[in-house]
Length: 335
Image 1 (cartoon, rainbow, N blue to C red):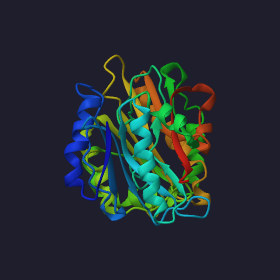
Image 2 (tube, one colour; image 1 turned 45 degrees about the vertical axis):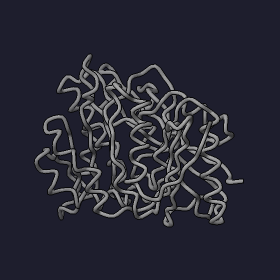
Image 3 (cartoon, one colour; image 1 turned 180 degrees about the horizontal axis):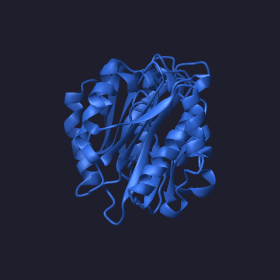
Image 4 (cartoon, rainbow, N blue to C red; image 1 turned 45 degrees about the horizontal axis):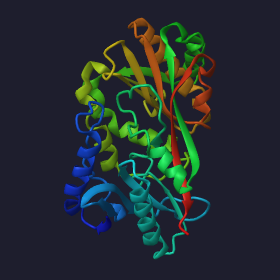
């Protein structure tokens, strides 16, 4: 027997969510629990489907008024988890659709926790283990969305480069061109991160403004996203690019793949540059700088993480990389 319950308070829904998460991920070394603390401004409503009084599917419905899709504000659903049961999944999605229909919203996108700054997308099933800071989901999630009739509206990819294919042959020439424009790249140590977060935020807001489904976030949310980076100490590599007047114009963030004990891996998590003609080629230059550092430190693998399939950064070293994992974002009408 199935029942559905709505919650407007996270404290009230948290016990049910925890029971569902325990049911899905108990003993799973790759699952990292994250308490949902950054969604209050988007007025989330949580829906939980119970099967025989046990949580079976859950998600929250929310609106981001700064986000637009096809010239309209879409309904969003995030914090999604479900057992492999299409009936409970269908009941969950039907309730979310009704919720948005009552508000005059006719299109639904997810999973997306309010903003692309936060968690979103579904991981497609494959045989590769997750890497550190990867999206991690149960292998049946994509089939539930597809069976329900939702469309893939965006796809993403993580790409792997083995040591014998690390490439930085264009690095020195690229750095010379940038230095002629007054742009210099320097290393940031983990203990210096807290002093540069304002610079990272300024660059990120400008760099990502043209991204698919972009919407800005507050500095407070940004700080929360980066609060644990300093704790990684020597397992994080950060580059900061500055103009001659010390104005920040780009940064790159990479972390060790601490999930993989079989080899030494580096994950390129973020590469951001401001929209300035003088910065043309800066992103590629920082990527090659990271490849060079990884080669010198005898890393075995580099993973370029979670890139949009249509992003120009996909062309960086594309001929030498191999697809490691793909991800999808889904959309559909609320009819």
